[in-house]
Image (cartoon, rainbow, N blue to C red; front, side, top):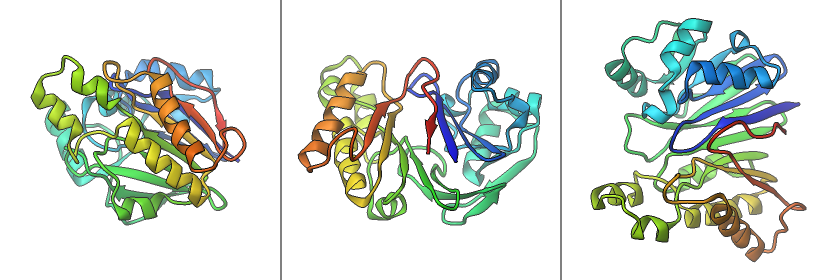
Amino acid sequence: MSRFCSLQSGSNGNALYFENGKTKLLIDCGISAKRVAERLAELGVAAAELDGILVTHEHSDHVAGIRVFAKRFGTPVYATAGTLAAVEEQRGSVETEMHVLRAGQPFDIGSVTVQPFDLPHDAREPVGYILHTGERKIAIATDMGKICETIALEMKSSDFVFLESNYDEMMLKTGRYHPQLKRRILSSEGHFSNDQAAKFAAALVRSGTGNIMLGHLSANNNRPPLAYGRVSEEIRRQGAEIGADVLLEVASRSGAGKIVDI
């Protein structure tokens, strides 16, 4: 049995927890080390028990707490060469065991096989992750401007998917963001909208995915009911039933959500 919990997910900070048997992983550490440790403790997990931190990319809402956390608890860090270089340029040396990974090259951490894959985002060598546990396949993909065929193939038939649903397009276009920032978010290397998430979620359900959690919602350009409503509408339009064919929920921007058994 595997367990997943979003410790926090949004434009203000991201940290996800996954465990399979004795193997315990953190995906990103974009909130303070203290807060991550506290939220892990609420799950009955000691921070020092973690086997590794998988980093998606170097933006602050994904790595803000990583230097302090890794040094304090001695947690190994796994990231692409581009991400590690960018983190050290921006934040200084990360004082822990470092592992350089490459998209398309799986590796094992305990009982979990980690398969990184490229994502289109305006960062230095960003990746998403497929976590294989033998019987289960878990996919994590946020901070991406589009879905290409390669990503769709990587993620299809996953048992559980954590999927970005960052913005409502109308809220973004009519909001107060600077036009340049709007263009960045809307670009193919920006973020995933509710509409994009809806279409891809429906395709995932058709491939056999039975559990989807939407995450990385913008504070200014989205609302949980908007994201949930748009995605659930599209899934139903494709003939599937929420709660029967697929479980759908939205991760909290401010705290830990419930534990998902996978």
